[in-house]
Length: 531
Image (cartoon, rainbow, N blue to C red; front, side, top):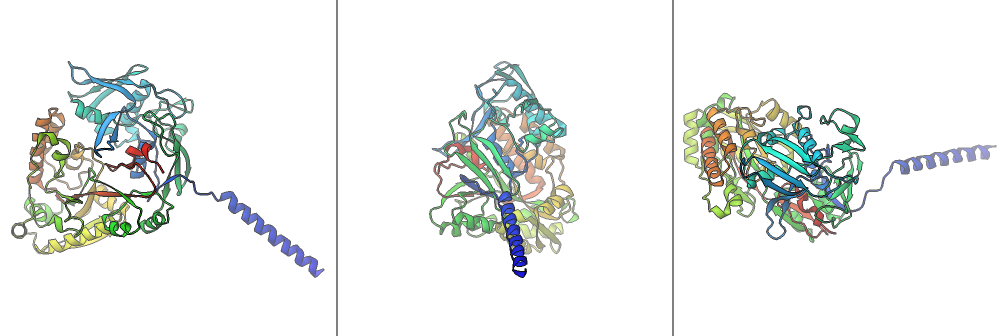
């Protein structure tokens, strides 16, 4: 009897083990194979109209196209705006504000044709206030209307005359379909079930088609065989989330990740020892700066802010990084020093002059004069700046001590940093990485206009606002260069922040061919990548 009872117990345990094993296999999913990109976070949305994290903005390039796209020239490595969904874009020679775009014969990933109505709908969605699109103000500052003349012809009306070299980059905004799964979408892309579903399972025209999304783990894409340039060279692309940068590098070392986008210059010596690693380096349209809270009485005086700028030896911020001309560009003004050389090389434009360059003696005198000497302040910086941010912050603390300003460097989580600096503006000094600009830094006004959404310094000046308006309205390249110089000088008289450096960024890859990267969005040449 006891043996029978034991047998029943053993059988029950075995059944439970089998059931548990079956449950594990039911919920366990094998990691997808393909070209694997390791990232710290997955996209929070795949709808380019809505606000997105950096990973979502990068993924836009996989799924969507604009009338024009930014592309990377494989030979020169330069970034150019080239026609994409548009077969031609022409300016009206009389008005110089009206552009006509004729569409190519392109189909959405679901097989339906792209029409001019899709382009007009997309612009209306960007403009819809309820979407709170981060691109709304930028596009609205250039374009007054986008209309479908016929199924293949789009009429774009700019607010003021604009030359082609500035118009084409504006028309790189991503186009989305007016109809999704057989239903016409509302321009309010937060309003209904279909509209919200589009953000997690989109339909585009880009080189890759959305396939699967495993929350917290990965998003997968398959090649679009009908892509307008040419079919992608790799059949499957995987965005895999690996939050910890140390684990991410280890996964890369073990060949479970093919490419890492988020890197620090401080890691390069270690990665170089791995062997078989390809480094794709580029100078982003971005820069580091110290934002100054001018509402703080300590920094209310422009003279005090001049002292903060003159006290910083930018090259000495991070030895081995900021002192290398091949890695760093020292910025003495609001606009990065290479703005003209990168965009107007043929004009042989002299570089910007420094507003308040490093001068230890002058900084000490200004600190004494402004009452800065003997004061204390806290320098905030976010976790996302990592070890490099820590080294920059520590260096700034040491350099400011030399002029009698005691600074405490305080590292915070990104959410706390953004709340204190960008939302509440409750800070003294903040080490900020300003990014997301186009090649002309057209969005600089967001940081510096009196009512700019990213103006965290509190500096407001009507004459600077007027100069920005002139800058926006200038259409002749030589005139635009002059106004940009005027802006640089004017901003220097206010000194709302301490410009620091622009740093090259590395992308690490293994077992991938044909990678050419020239901007913060690494996927501009993705259709050529091959394993």
